[in-house]
Image (cartoon, rainbow over all chains, first blue to last red; front, side, top):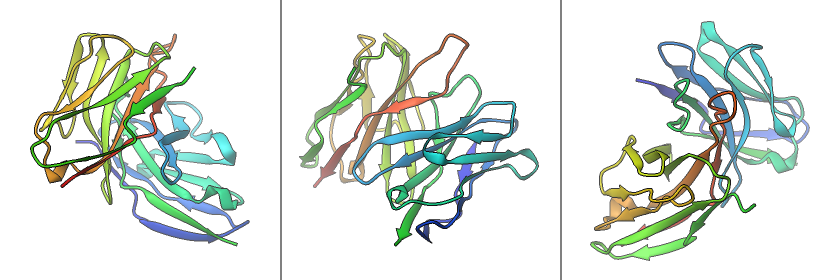
Length: 114
Length: 116
């Protein structure tokens, strides 16, 4: 069965510092991979997605993620965090062709210190 | 273009009561889904639909019913609410895309449900 692990429940970084949020997945083949962000009291917004091709994916708000097949990972990065990036981040996977059935990780809550 | 809308935003029910959470989208998306979000568990798929008249179960379907009579609407029904159904519920829709599944799901703002 597919599963997603986000090992960091809560991360605090200083404004301007770099950020890396970890995501590992379990799946027999290469799944479709997604990162979503949820601001307090809001719905989820897609940051970026990976289906195939270039393993470094650029998303919105200056985020990027790198797919590493050998490590079954899809870590999210940002070179310089802004206070407005404070939110909860979710990694998700789906079978190719079945992306209406997303499997989510448990989320990482990001706090940004001034 | 309002995207995905959900009503109500907040609801308190007593155990055993029934209610329907409404979800509508104006993007002509075929695929729609319902998720629940619980602390420490991420989002879990309840039910989904691949088009009008077609629904299927997700990961946690027990206690919930759905129907899809139109492309736009995908209501979620709780027939007899239980405290274990206290959660935040999100509806989502997805575009098939011209080149196949685009993958991006658009989420509504959520309904926060408390069952006492």
